[in-house]
Image 1 (tube, rainbow, N blue to C red):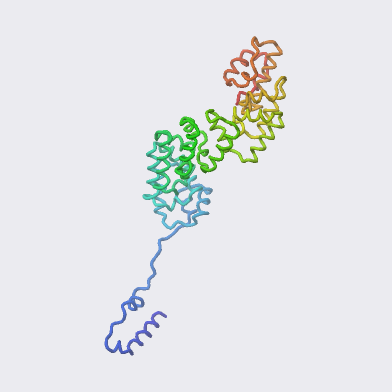
Image 2: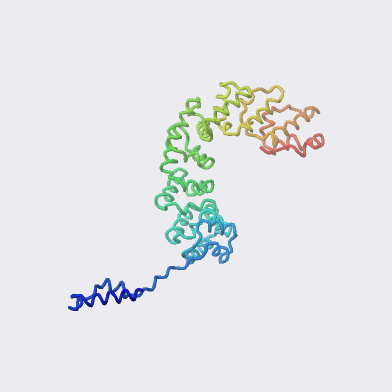
Length: 380
């Protein structure tokens, strides 16, 4: 058909004045109709599932998960280079499979512009190869983040707060989420605000390690939390102040109201509830079920009332079955047999370490305790 069209155009042109005067045919027409019509060959693509399972022996689960997002690979050689690079840098098969399940796009990334620079910046913090593999397998979306506008500034911000690369390394082991958010818009203004409220640098550093996401909330939310803590009467000079802010940040207003209702139902007055919060705000972050279980167990002991819970709120963090009830059972047996030279306070009995409890109240009386010595709990 193309040949027929060309003949018609040539015949038409031969009858024109321009052709009779030997006017040249347009070069564009010449290129269009007389150049080779062979199509440009595209690079072959292969099914991702076959590539991962047959060529690299990855598990069907990892391969199918990756293939669901990327059915075909247009440049298998590029993917080969990426997988080889990861293996050469300490990534095990398990590490790589986790990455492929969560972020299969890594297979199609640019090795020199994306993978290598981001791996290097994490290496420069002080991570070992195994640690880097663990971090990136847990959070491969780091490969998506901009090196210049996100990763480098985040690491720099962390270092300014924690004081060293070792500190940054420790923080990222706790949570690589620090590399997924803009710290200049979240963590840094929140830390500065809390410092202005009297929170010490040492507490801030401890909280970065213990509650990393606490600092990543919106600054306006942090200001609202501080306002509520102030209204609840927690002194800014108290070491519990930041714990109070953090406790409120861990629950919605509805859950907070439910906690208040629970304490009221246990017999605590409004003043006692506020006193408990000021003394041990972290207790309010415990589930309602556990608070109720421990409180009811304690209130069931003779001569103990709600004031005991207010005075010793840390008891609420312990396990009833794992610590409180078994220790109470040991105490009651020893007391009934008049084996205790000095009667310990219940708070001492409940709070001492498992090792001390065992050495003081179980091992010396194992014969008298019988089966109880075998089943008492030492877990907190």
